[in-house]
Length: 265
Image (cartoon, rainbow, N blue to C red; front, side, top):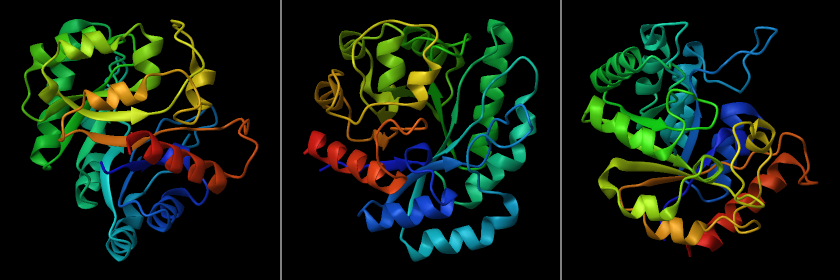
């Protein structure tokens, strides 16, 4: 059976430390977490984040629970800043032995987007990290699978791969038929969740923060998984920020883990 990782926004209780402990109790050995995160209007971190001051103790926690970080978030390419600002968070991800960092492309100037993405890849490579290029309906510079594939080819960085979130794939018009025509080697990371239908949308933020348990919606997740090469990391990303699942954080995360395992078994 394929390995599964648990994303922080699926299990928010207890922050990164709680995520690691829960994942270990659930029999997982991989997680996805934040070493950088957007801030809200009050200037507070939107998601739990590992801080540089916690690096040593968090490394011990990972070691004690035999846990690996398959990706650290969130490193967007934006018009308002240079990716060089991410250097401390990238260094922290490397110190924690993360496998990759993840980026979205919000910059709409094609030349600058390519330049900044190349620079981010170089920074990651210097730290022994891969970069996952995730397309979303909210990131205007790369908001579809086709655009991600084109940008991947133009940048041509050896440590860059495409990350596919099931929700973003189907809400932006992506199809499994598209995936079948692509070189499977450039898809390196996939996030599992489910949804109620296949409608296209440029504004689905509420749904992105409140997703369905894999197997409880209509997304063809088994078929998606069947297209993935053995090198692809798979992550369970099923947030329930509104509490619509009707259960506490740990019970929700257990449901997501169990359903994902059943799906891939």
